[in-house]
Length: 92
Image 1: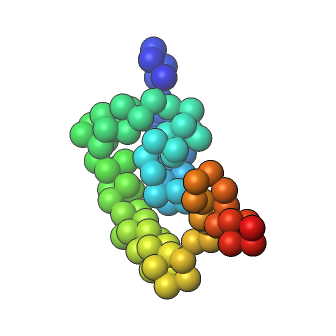
Image 2: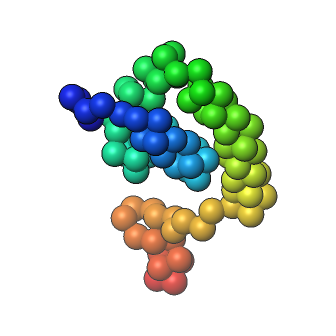
């Protein structure tokens, strides 16, 4: 957040959130920092950049697994036609 001084501990809090969600915005929000800080830290702190880059393959694998799961198993969603659920529409 503007005007705050972030420590190595603050920076380190973003990485687990990124590993868990695969999203920088959510990881920063959970750590209580503005996402712009993440991009500044990448440029300014080699240790933060290394930790972030080490998390990238894990996050990529997580996303790939979820894409595969959705492609194979699908996602249950109700289907609507003319404002009615297709299941209800077929019964009428």
